[in-house]
Image (cartoon, rainbow, N blue to C red):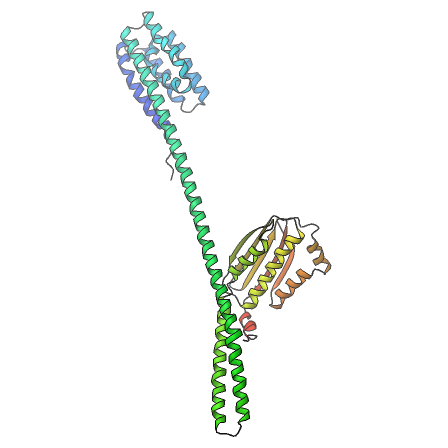
Length: 383
């Protein structure tokens, strides 16, 4: 948390110190109405400078010295306006020092009072310059600290992005390997077990009525049970390999690679049935492809959110919506890409819309309900 700006308080403390330095020459001059009046004027010049604009404060300090030349008692308190003069117009300090000397030359003040007043003015100017340098250094240090903190936060954000990218690549590689293993089991072990079941059944039929028929039936049943286990394992591997968020990022990234289009993907979904995953990936792929083919967009935003009752996919671009061929085709009923997306989504009981966005550009919206999806997808499984 940044410290409060303490410059005014430090200057007020300096002016109180300067005022104490004026006590000695005041004791030599004596307290009289003229000295009291000039004390009030000097205090007004000193403390009004904290609330006045810089030029007004400097003009007020300069005005004090002609008054002090007319009323020599004001020389005693010249150190107070000299403080502001050192801050606003240091070049005028030397002419201002001539005022006490003139008062001493005319005999209005004793040489001791003049020397004490000049010493107080010099101390006041030194305090003013020191305080200004201290405050300026503090501000500069605070600025540097803020810049370093900003860089630190930027590096932390960059590090998080790199870690997320690494985790994404690892997850994508893991899913790809699981999908490969599922394909290998399906294509090799599954087919071998299926052939073994067919052969066992053939031998059983060929030896019908023989004592070995029961043994062959048991072998066929065991192999069939193993085939069911292999099928279950393949489907489990395929389900594990279908991380919807990872696949969506990969799909959009590959579609935009090497093009003018910059993609911003926000995916908050993980596990989804294979049919839902295939549908939403196809919608996203076709929507991004339409952006590249039919619009002048530079950015596309893809958002996937998993709600308790549905999956929601939104694809928005910043191109001009008017006159887009895909939009025109959709209105005329001849847009094959949009029609295909609509059919895919409605086949799963979902909702599909495409049209100009509320903030410009083009928006594709698809939602697929969760209820009953598992039953629809599980019934069609096969090895």
